[in-house]
Image 1: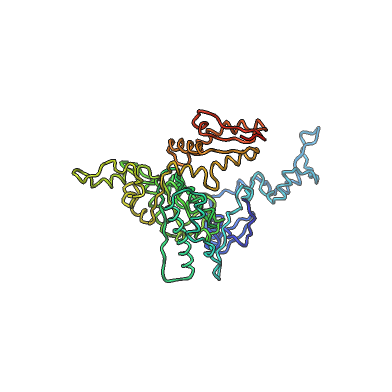
Image 2: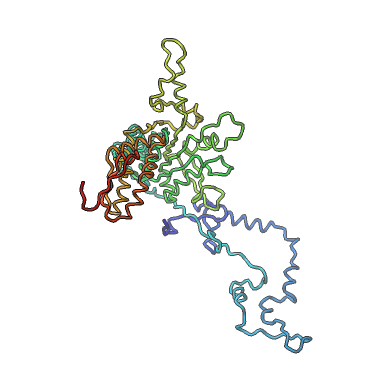
Length: 501
């Protein structure tokens, strides 16, 4: 969304070193809305004064102007040849008003003294002369806090809001509600200058694919009026390699806060696919997007001043840099952690050997072993101890079963069935699903083993023909999806307008 920014609310950025005015000092404004700090301007003067011009050949310039005439004098007198007299050449003054467009442009631009030499105007290039906007920090008196703690909902209210959209996962919703509420209580406590420093509690969510990890955080963003950024750990690489730097995670939060540093410093960052940063085993190649990224994230998770690019993912881009303190940023990491259940089973069966007290190896095959996860299991999976230590709250999400799938289809505010009913309602057609059809959809989704994402795939398959055929006949008033249609042993029930079963 394009917004009109007021210059008095945003800092000027040095065109050369990309530092804001709060760091570089008073800016020198040049034509084209280009700002240069005093340090860069002094370095430019020093470079010019220290340049050796003794070998510079001025003869090339003097040859352009024979008899020391300037181009303006040459314009007044140009050699012309009269017809019928090829031997005689006379100089006639050039009449006024006969200049070409190019000559007029040169004269207006003040460049007529140097023919065949053009000067670049940096303001003519796309993006040149413009600057990314960075809001000014308050000076003197302390500004109002970016987050009003009185407007933050208590944990039970946050969970009630989450219950409207997310089915099940009671423990996860309770844990994330308490963590978010304590996070902003901690910030409010710091604003009171209390002697007791409360450490922030970053979180690690573990759950199979399609159980609602990302959806839980997205729903949280709707409930809380705080900046929230969702980053993907798979795109991060070690500094110096192709890919996003660690600072790009904070840069996304700054963009979500409308480049307001104070507001971004109290936001929430969700790093998805964190399990893809696990340490590679039995490899001799450099692990540039695994353990190296974990080590790079350590200072960001704990809290430090990080220089981040404004409006870009890389510091190499011609964009300004600003400093963001991550001390008050709450980090939530999530991942599917495939095969982590095998690591947990191996630990649980460690005491099993032989004898009457030995456990069966398949004892935990039909249990929710992810709920028994410990820090040791996550470390054995491939996460380094320093990284795990900065994520003190670890909780898991359950894999969706058949009953939960049925609730996901019907109960949430934006349930998938409600979405299709809304689509057909725009065609003035009523859509209904009987209980048998809903159960059949949930059973087929479980077979795909991709969690709640499979529900949309199954529905798209069976709703394709209905969505295609219904607009053909304006007399159709109601469609009932049956279990026979889902199991391909029958068809849907179609009622015409004014007809009742």
